[in-house]
Length: 83
Image (cartoon, rainbow, N blue to C red; front, side):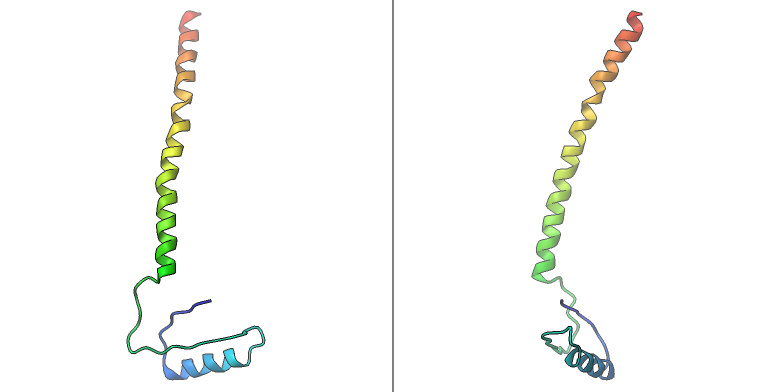
């Protein structure tokens, strides 16, 4: 799990203490920076690219079934006018 948080020293000390003595946490690493990192990580950038590619292929697939019922509607009109 990766958490990107901005907090004061007191909160950071408490988090370190909780991670250190929590049996569910196997390893932890705290990296302190001077400024907040606000750019997307490479993992998130990759995930957003995959989501965009899925979204662009989904509308094309959704349009094809919408075209299929149109001939059936025309046949119904033809049958109704023939009677």
